[in-house]
Structure formats: C-alpha cells, structure tokens
Length: 262
Ligand code: APR
Image (cartoon, rainbow, N blue to C red; front, side, top):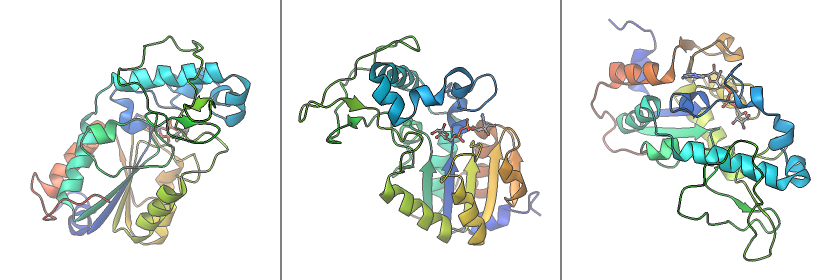
C-alpha cells in the first residue's frame, strides 16, 4: 500500500512536465530572487538591472552584473535535484523540462531539450541586430557585484551586446512558450519545483495543467500561492524531496523503455 496517494498515478504517467525556478539551483549556491535575506532582489533593484530601460540607461552596470552572475553559475555544480529530474526523464516515457532559470545546471546534470522561458546567461546577443554573440571560451572574470564592465560590440553591426535573458516587460521566446503551454495542457503529471509562482506568464503553466486534469505536485521549502491550487504540496528542499520521490516511484529502474525528453 503506497504511503502517498500520488505515487500510483505517477507510476502510470506517460507524460510528465517539470517546471523549475530558482529554488532548484539554490542548493548549488546560486541565489534565488525573492528569498528574504538571500534573494537577489533583497539586495539589488530589479528596475536598475533587469529591464530594457535599465540597460539603455547604464549598459556597463547591467553587463557587469550579469557577468558577476555568469561567473557564479560557472563555478556552481548541479545538485541532487537537477540529477533527480534527469533520472525522472530516464524513467518515464516522456518528460518536458521547463525552466525559468537562466543557468545551465539542468543541462550540466544531463537534461536535454530544456525549455528556457527566461533565456540563458550563456546566450548573449546584439541589442541592435539580435545576432548571437559567441562568448569567449574561458570562464568570465570573477568581478565584485556592481563593477561596471563595458559590453562587447557586435562584429556585424557594431551594436552593444546584451545578456541573453528575458527582462521584466519583455516577451518570452515564443517557440519555447508555445511548447511549454502545449506540454502543460497534455501531460498526466505536472511538477512545479522551487518557484514562488509569482512571475507570469510562467506561473500560469501550473493552472494550465490543473485545468487539463493532470496530477499537480509542488515542491518548495516554503508556502506559495500554489499551495491552495495544486493537488499535492511537498514541503522541503528540492535536493532532498526529489531524489526520494524518484526512487520511491520509479525505483532505480527505467520504466519507459527509451529515454525521450522533449
Ligand atoms: N528547494 C525548494 N524550494 C526552494 C529552495 C530549495 N532548496 N530554496 C528556495 N526555494 C523556493 C523559495 O521558497 C521560493 O518559493 O524557491 C522559490 C524561489 O522563488 P523566486 O526567488 O521568486 O524565484 P522564481 O520563482 O524562479 O522567480 C521567477 O522571477 O526575477 C524573476 O526572471 C526571474 O526567473 C525568475 C522569475
């Protein structure tokens, strides 16, 4: 007899969707945004750093700050939560991994085809002609937060290069967004892990899955607005809850035959 009511439903799930937020990278030492003391927005003003007008106003402050974050991410390692999601993908017939995170820790943990709704630190581009900019291979110089660094210039049009992230007030990448909505509306099981579910439209994906009748499970250290809406809310660190759940539901074995993540 299963302890938790959702275990059997997860075992039968053909298509699982996982939506992650900053909390999934917290145990890798990458700060979240809204955690009271440690969150980035507790120290920095998002309107001075994470909007197109902030970049217009002071491009070297913004570029310096994102280089600071890129250096922090490069020295971080995936944690047990990232690895548990990779293991889950190997255990189910189909898994769609959607993240709000701009780090590459899911990919470094072995996850494929990750849908990055808020862009990627590793994919800067020209603010004028939008041409992708190839970052130098060597890791970014570790800079103190707040150090101004003049953004590089585009080899094609001479425009300034901007961080490859989606800023407040900007549209999400449409292809990734459409695939995320499609997956949330067709899945059997939907996890929202380490997100405050405060930022739209990403947070609305959980409601799409709820309306589609999927079993919905939240994993978070603290209460969020989703507590009242998801079917199951697991309180705890993603790095402890997810590995335990994956082994309890799918054991170590591969239940889906081939591994397909899309
Ligand atoms: N395990 C599980 N949950 C955790 C952990 C952990 N180890 N550590 C923190 N959390 C939870 C917090 O309780 C919080 O609910 O993760 C959540 C992080 O929330 P936010 O900091 O708001 O991050 P996120 O939801 O990803 O933010 C969404 O906002 O600032 C923008 O573009 C940015 O993508 C980001 C978006």
